[in-house]
Length: 161
Image (cartoon, rainbow, N blue to C red; front, side, top):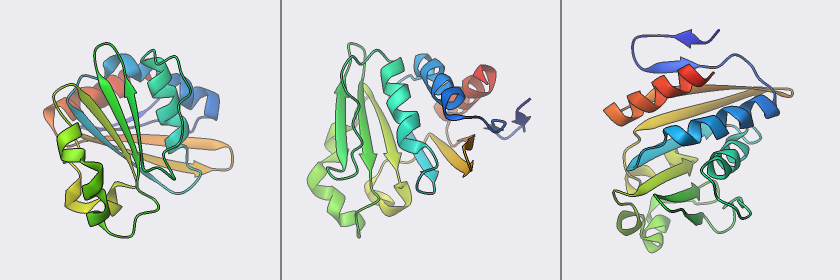
């Protein structure tokens, strides 16, 4: 059973990678742009694995790559576009200016940002934050809402656990 509070924050029980990717694939149907999701957690906690399953769950037929070196990957789908940022390697939020996130993020976009704290004010405000924790082979994901659309997403997250 998931932990539930009245603040729009829901946490999964510890789960293996297969359960986590299954959750991400099911959650894909609940993404309604515009939506900005910040993904937080240590290296190896499952952020990129979750995003890969989420994008595949949206119906993207190609390879979903980690944007660790290129910073940004685009996925164009019939009803929306996904921007996947990995800011682990940036040293200053000003480095994001050349990516043009402000111009790319529109009413048809789901923005998934790993290591968002490194982006500072160069990123749109989070509608929801996903916090990833790991211990051995188990992962725990917590969804925290920061807007009405984030609240709807977190309630869907809880329902799908």
